Length: 412
Image (tube, rainbow, N blue to C red; front, side, top):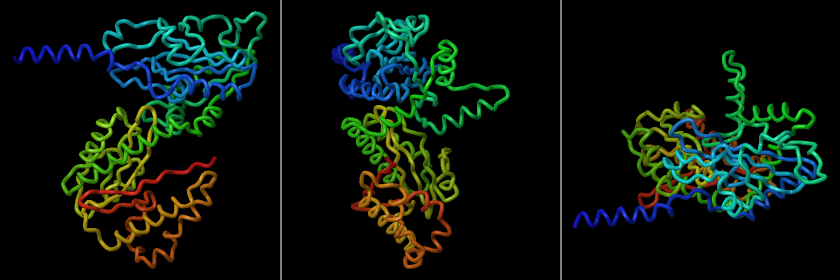
């Protein structure tokens, strides 16, 4: 009886495996990628090309996450891929490495240069070529069209490409640190790629494509908004689970684990950034505290700034709450002021609103007179770093933590 059940489960898993092994994203259609390509063409003009470098093969048992911009333009996650947008012909060519059978036996299907028709259908690109085609003379400015002309400019990324748990500011800072290291001097892959493009196309102007992609990615499509909302929901569930798990004697990393569990079970495989789970004012005042090894003590505040990476879209949510539910009057008043701040922000947060005007409208509850009226002067003196960093709003209802979620507004 046991043997029959075991065999039935084994057969089910074997049959279901091709369905479970997803090797291309399902969030965006070829039409959405075509709309993005068209906007790039409009900005680079009729006599230029734009070329994008995908992530390299990972050097360890690391989750192979594609660069953000490359994924935005293709949805392809194959390591070592390149994408060429030709403004002269308005055509898209994807360059892929040859099939790696050993890698596929170990990790599953990976799209390669052997999958020409499949990749065209999935992505909407006009052509799929092997990486060896990029070794042709004067690539990528040469043209294969009869009577065609060489491109006058090549657009490429000048800034380091963002991958898992990365942002441009930290990448630039890290590259700068390597550059001034006497025994290193290394540069990002994107900078090295630009150097090679200049060396191999000395008569062609190399331009920065990052401002174009930054502008395009600043406006989200309906599908992108859905993914961001989902990422924010999952982040909220993670923080609420951490709140429910809060009590004296619990370690910071245990709250981290509670939130991470919610991320994983809801489909977020990766983290948007490492967990900031800080208990006590000293830890909280370290802006990007990451050790997460302290133990929670009655009377402490906890700050958690943690969010998932959900299908390449992330959230950035942070909240502050007390270890002990019965708050001091000063803490309760401070939370009330935070709540008023968030309410004001929500009312004036409309498209086109600038940061400076938004701040003037929302700072009322934090004015000097407001602090005096709420008897917060002493509390703010002790916990200023906490409250100025994070306007946390929370309250307890039927033994469940609930909190108000708000989003940042960017100038546009």
